[in-house]
Every structure is written in structure tokens, then in C-alpha cells.
Image (cartoon, rainbow, N blue to C red; front, side, top):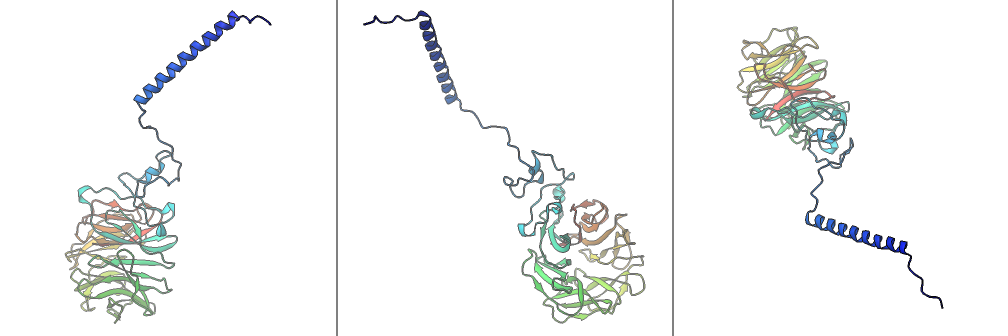
Length: 370
């Protein structure tokens, strides 16, 4: 038998050295584990990038800039705040989403503003708070819906629509529910306005090429004419329901008139060239706001009910369809001053002009409610 082999001294050194290094590394790993166990790491402060158009992690109602905070920012006009999204079934396309409301601080206008919004090439009825927030689309018809007004109590909306092929008068509540057609087959009907005194609605009826002021009950019964035309349009009740203001071309150029609620005692208030249509009473019934001027250059005016005290409130921009706030502190109107029909408000002396909407679509015909 052979004698046992002797250890190689070089190999011996490497083996002992490797064992020593291994023990050192093992000690370091155990020490690191103990330190980490005693001092766990805090939450990460870095953010995961969000691609443009990824809405899965956005809370509804968040600022639109939150959608793009990690991509190229989309800037809103100065002073604009958050947008409340419309219901999914009525949400316009992305290029039609309204800009958010301006900030008014402690003097924010109150109430609701009903207006006409041009969505997918069709006029619809929309509503928003008087500061421009919480815009909602109330109708989604295949035919035009416009000329909306709000009941004195602020709970009902009356408007004109040709959803059945002819312009008829409809009603719905302020949430867009309980839709009812009130008329049928008496002409082409526009600009309904509810009486604050009794169960009457006044409106424009176009028949045989002429336009007249008509009145009916809230349920559509007993419709009949108050004027004979040939162009009497856009009636509005006074706050006490005793008078009706309207526009008429009965003396040649269209002017602003006032009559008793039964159509008697018609009197002319203005002698302006190119008077517009829809007017609005101040809450105290002492003044009327209206618009006048050539096509493309209308301005807003106010005048006393006796025809005195005419004041021009705007100067350029094509301004139309004024409507007084219920508290008398503001007037809302449509203007084309920014290259598109948008809704604005201003003080009754013409100061404090503020834009409420900012869209690629047209917003117009505002009427103020409670």
C-alpha cells in the first residue's frame, strides 16, 4: 500500500485564505441585515410617469392639468380653476370640454345660468352655476333645442325644440328630467317665458310669414295671440308679471316695446337703429337690459321702463342676449369678442366683465335663474 500523500503547501495557503475571506463577507452581510432590520427604508418620493391620455388613475373632478403633470403641460387661462366632468352619456368630445370657472372670491355670483350650447353640430340646452362651474348638458336631441328660460322659482326650464320636426315649446326640471311637450301644431314657437304672477307662458309664434306674441297656460291649453305682428318677438315678463317687454318692427326698424300682460297699452321705449331681440328686466322692475347695433357689432344697453336713462354698457365685440341676475348684481350676456360665442357676466354699470365659458363650440342665449 502507498503511503498517504502530503499536502501541497501552496494549495494550503489559498484554501486558508479563501475560508478567511468568506467569513469576513458573511459577517458584513449579517451586519448589514441587522442595520436594515433596525432602520427600515421610508416610502419612495419619486413619481411614476403618467402618459398623456391615461385617465385610469385620475380622480373625477380633478384639475385638467393633473392629467398632464408628467407630460407637456396644457395651460388654462389665468384665474381658471377645476372642471366638473359632464355625465358620460352627455360628455362632448375632448375639444369641446369647457374651461373651468374664474375665481370671484367672496363676491361670487349666485344662482344658475341656462344657455344654448352647440354640441356635435346641434344646439342643445346646457346649465352651469352662475360662476361658470359645474357645467352640464341637459338635452341630447337630434333636433335643435334653444331659447331656454328659467321659472321664477328656479325649478323648471322652458325652451323651444324641433325634436319632432316642428319648433314646439317644452318644459323640464332643472336637472333635465320630466321632459314634456306643451304645444302641437299651432305654428313655429320660440322664446318661452314663464309668468311670475300666474300659470301663464308667453312666447313667439311664427305663422304665415309673420311673428306674433302669444300666451298659453302652463299645460299648453288656451293658446292665443296678444299682438298682431308683423314682427313681434322675444317676450319677457316683468318681475310682478303685469307687463311684457318685447321687440317689434311694427314702426319700421325694430325697437323695444312694453305692453300690459293682456296685450293692451303698447308703448315704444327706444329709437335706436338695429335693435336686437331678447331683453331682460331688472329684479326691481325699473329697468330693461337689451342689445342693439348692426350685424356683427351689437352692444348691451340698459334703459328705464319709461324710456329714459339709456346707457350703453359694452363697446364692441358683438354682444347679445342680456339677462339680469335675480339679485340685481350682475348681467350675463353672449359675446363674440374672443372670436367665438362665449358667455360673460358684468356689473349693471358695465364694469367687472368676466368670461364664464371658453370652448371651441358656441355658447349663447344665457338666461339667469335662482
